Image (tube, rainbow, N blue to C red):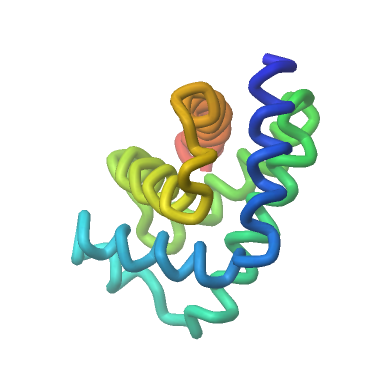
Length: 135
């Protein structure tokens, strides 16, 4: 897990300066994959993009100690239920996010980096789903 955390941290540095365009790529891809998800968002996407990247930065900074983020992630999962997020949406979000990261980092988004992000995002989603179930 420590190697995954380091790969995620190192690769995230590549998108810090292009975080807003990366987030916009994410939302575009998300709505391409599932147009019904657009109805869950009633906010300014520039502001939403900042929230997304701030949350992602928190995950990246804590990637080798995600257990410390467990309460925060579970609370996030509970809150997302109120927004209309369903369990099946998590896979779509992960797919869209991995795609956007790959676009932003290419060619540095190699198989090892993709695998590390996939594992970290999987843990994040799992904790959010636990929170959603508890909510």
